[in-house]
Image (cartoon, rainbow, N blue to C red; front, side, top):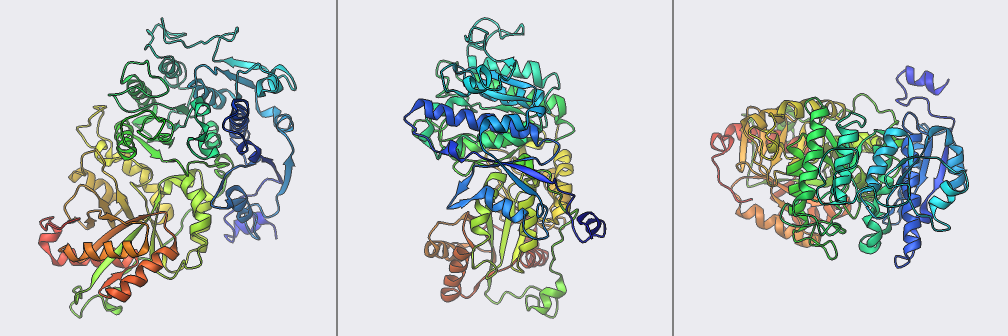
Length: 629
């Protein structure tokens, strides 16, 4: 019986795979001397060319797989390929055909590309323009460098002599974008910044004209990386993340978000020019698609290199405020962030994985009142039995990024103590776009103690308060209905009914309309920051987000004990970031030994019990109870 027949019978969810895939080992581009500019340039150039090629090649089918990302002793690309190739899985019978070098790689897939987009080493922003044009016009991005041995010399001036279809610099090698006069091909006066002129050119020529799919954007570090490659690990240029966004014809950018300073990569610009340029790009994207589709921004502020007060990043603002301000601005234009944040930002092969066929529905059990009664949580009258007990839930995060899920799950999910204590794994369901096979694998291998909720702040990271009218920054119409319609299909597929954390950041808290919005797709619970300690909105239980836990299990248990003791309600939320099941098991063991009245519940039990308690306590349901965080 064939795989296709089994699929038709409902025994397999997988579509027919390709007969073979090319495997290209790019790990050589991780081995360079950060003090040698030619080695640094070669590492950048090879990764950029391969990523743009891969996005084009894999756009309508899984053909090319790249080895590049390793983390915590695991070669992540091998790990996921091996799981996809396990017995009964999607790629079980697919041949792997190694490709020995870059020239062979180009020749193998030459039919998919039209040539090269050449970009300017003197204007780093043009590297992101090149990735944009690569997706729109099926071109490989190559940096102009006429030195012998460069990638330009190997592939354009020599070797296969790929034709230059697009130039982002003049024929004589001088810069096209100078920060003077008018912006090329427009009648717009220069901003005084070559960087921002380049992005406004892109806005005018490609976003405003509909040549890109404006529902996809990519905030990834530009070629400025070559000035400070040792600021983070070698894969944190995040070039291998480009492939998915090239495949979707996204627009790429790398711009600061603070209006009160100049960025380290463009210190002569007028303060706020980066910010004004970013707003212009987002507004044009909104005008193209934003009233009908949420805008998916992959990537994140490259905080180790630019825009923060990190050493050599040149800014005065700290990392979290920079994150919150970026999110506030993006949200104002109906954009959410798929937050590939340093230093776990690298991902490869998303253009390949996007073709993994998911099940239409992944069910999860919910707890009924009868279940609660049978387990002793309700008395004979159906009331919550506290008996001095205090109930806690862990927000197991942070998984609002495909890259973080891709890198961390090989370590966390394979932990030998997973299944010993109930854990609420909070993962953004929009991860299914770039890492669908990870979410499928987690569901197929979950224990009874693993339950899934959505990460901040739903199907993507944004500030929902910035969707509410009136809207600061953009003054656009309210977009709560659009957000609900965006989230609903993701929540339905994964049977999600809880949003484990809502980061309000610098945005307004949820209004009545905002709470109504979440009740449409997250009916069993939300945990915002800017709400009363307790609230029942209709039938939606709302609990204000609590404390982040420290890294040492003993200190974490002590903090839980301290916070529980001072709060006036018996339900408590705690967040931990990238902690293993073994870590949670140790925290719980300490609590049981020293404070047995504190009980960790599974998510369905916690929220159904909390809802029942709210209905029994009108002051709590109406947000009238004052309790410390």
